[in-house]
Length: 160
Image 1 (cartoon, rainbow, N blue to C red):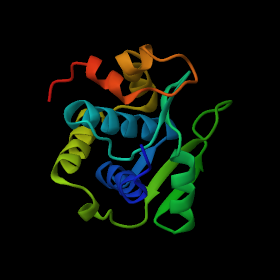
Image 2: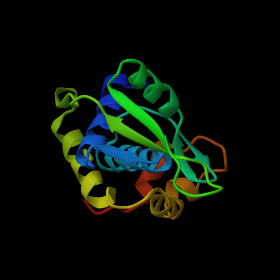
Image 3: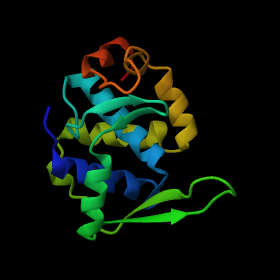
């Protein structure tokens, strides 16, 4: 699979826009992208971002997330600020869209899937999304720190 940079960036912007202009926490953003990609793959055998996910202790993590969001900040289409929340914890990264997403990069199925992700998972926090992803076949079936095969999406039994 190869990275769909335009779709990747616009998916991030779209998720931010739909969630009151921001996504709180890198973990939350990573999991929302995971659900978007794996749900779509399970449904029509393609992913939105084209990214590769690795099974890390906190759940599936898209490998290009850091690179893509840094590029977006450089191009002034995304803002990331560190917000200290609790004593002794790392600051939460808050992703804010600085521009409207370009929805023309998505086809109908991809748009519907992103909307579904916002409705189904948008209200959950990073920890809750981590727990959900840990209970799924793709994560369970993959050795820690290894790439998660998209084909494992077929063992989830998602109802669309």
